[in-house]
Length: 142
Image (cartoon, rainbow, N blue to C red):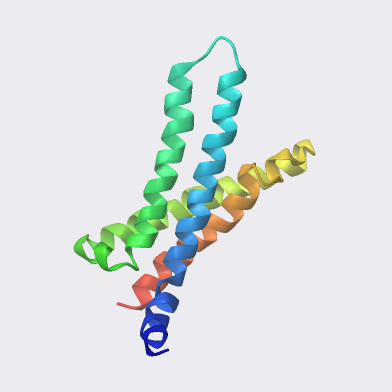
């Protein structure tokens, strides 16, 4: 029982970074899976578009996710905290703009596939604000 009490405060303190990490990885993962499936079914294949858009966007999501997580992990203390906060704030802005764009697109076109589990809507709606919260909260603790 004593072991759980020792871990509890650290887990609660890290929760903003963990949630931002999970939501942003989900966004990048959904992007990778859906667009890879689309790429595999298209002919002819556009490898440049796949590499830049599919792999590139997923990699950027992973960078944002890891920056948010690093703000709250002991291994992240070896990295410049201000730089991690800046990357996390940039992720918040970019992904929040994606959420606004996706919602606007879904409303104007009445195409709700953007808001499905595999679409960018739900994940960007979660990831953007969670990245902002993680960056803000880490700054408040310093």
